[in-house]
Image 1 (tube, rainbow, N blue to C red):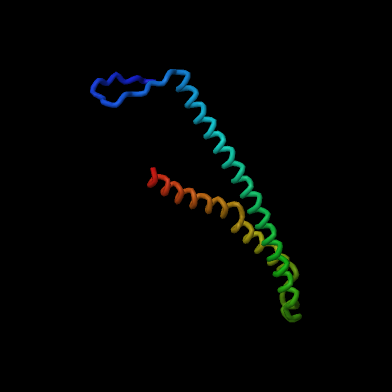
Image 2: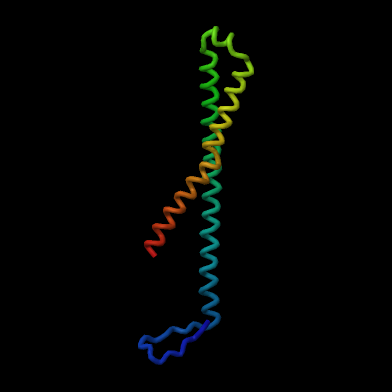
Length: 124
């Protein structure tokens, strides 16, 4: 809202009235709120789709691991306890799910955000 009174300037300065300034700023604020809402909806959809994909992949891995344990030789099943199979089925799959779950999604988002920020800063 500062109105410079420079007499050495050869270009005329455009002075906005308070209502024009307020309208211009409010339009910018509404646009930024809209961009934030769209970004929030997109990230929520991304998280939802990623979670579904991770659950499907881990359930498929669990089935394949169970099949591989069942197809072992009888001597292998006699030498190992049944609790060991249960441990292999659930503990390993949980580790894999944690590895490709939400934390990995956050890591990928941070990397893309950093790359996008660098590109934007060079453009600006």
